[in-house]
Image 1 (cartoon, rainbow, N blue to C red):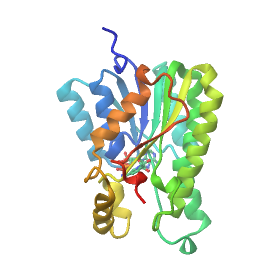
Image 2: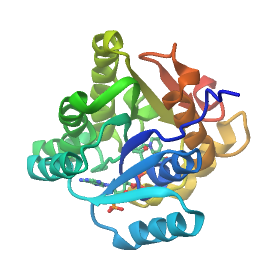
Image 3: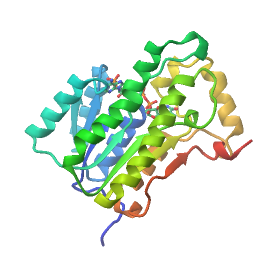
Length: 253
Ligand SMILES: NC(=O)c1ccc[n+]([C@@H]2O[C@H](COP(=O)([O-])OP(=O)(O)OC[C@H]3O[C@@H](n4cnc5c(N)ncnc54)[C@H](OP(=O)(O)O)[C@@H]3O)[C@@H](O)[C@H]2O)c1
């Protein structure tokens, strides 16, 4: 039977694919039969442990270490893809950074830093990857609640995600005729290393659980399964959508 949800033999580039949500997506996609290139920047231990799992489970996961927030890093990525003569069935932009605090304490330098990875890298990578994107391929941008709501100490990341969402919707409209589907995946809070940079982590997570109809935080796997759906042929009609995976938190007052 043709399994519409299968990713068998499809090729994906996942930025930030070695830790947190990106790592869960790398593993889910590879377990669904895909060849994954997981990009990361600094933390070698996470990349090595992902390689170990791939070896144990016989999964097709390659690691590309490089800073995609600048032209040089993106150039190295392109050279690597050229060398492999790689075409792609999908691109997932998970890599993100943040400088957290009240906006009046932050500077344009902070804003440039956040935008360069969260938003501009996505724009540049989409343009760079387009010539190698196959028909019926998918692009997914990872966003967050801060794109639409005011979240304590999250102003710069929220603004970068709002721009990322707007870009994604415009790309979705422009690329649909080329049979490339662009969507946004917006997870609720899920405990990853990124939370260590946020003030009052425990209090905020407790409050989130309290107001979430599901009664708990969503899991990395729940987010990864939704990414799989968005990149599979089962989602052939889903274009320019923001898929919220938050256990219902966003519907509450
Ligand atoms: N966690 C949440 O609660 C939550 C909620 C909503 C949305 N999101 C979104 O989901 C995505 C993933 O978040 P996360 O919490 O899983 O993040 P995370 O655990 O902090 O992981 C970040 C990943 O991005 C990589 N990275 C950072 N800077 C990079 C750069 N310049 N070039 C290439 N790779 C770089 C990191 O590589 P190294 O390991 O080498 O540093 C790591 O693999 C983000 O877009 C985030 O905004 C997260």
